[in-house]
Length: 105
Image 1 (cartoon, rainbow, N blue to C red):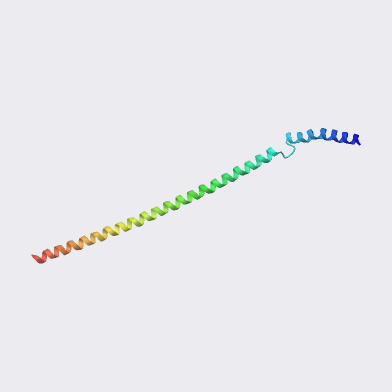
Image 2 (tube, helix red, strand yellow):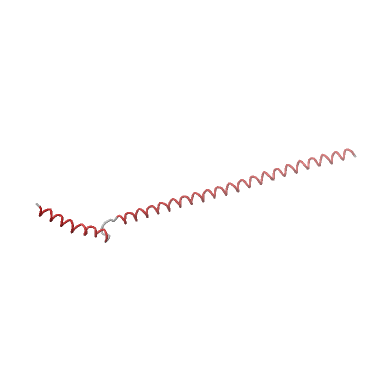
């Protein structure tokens, strides 16, 4: 019985370094390889998230610029209308004043 235990122990002692060596030579799927793959996946996910964020920022900036241009155009038109109304009001007042002056003469 003791001989079997010794033989089994000897087999384990001989095979354990050999199995560990497989991992060192890249024959097994090592933990470092798994960690590297996870790291690369995380980097790829971060890049995708950054691309999405960049695209959203560009879209926001484009919409903001278009909105500002529309507002500036509408404000310019409103300003022109106000000036035109003021000119008409002044023109009407001037015409009324000249009419009053003509009547007084």
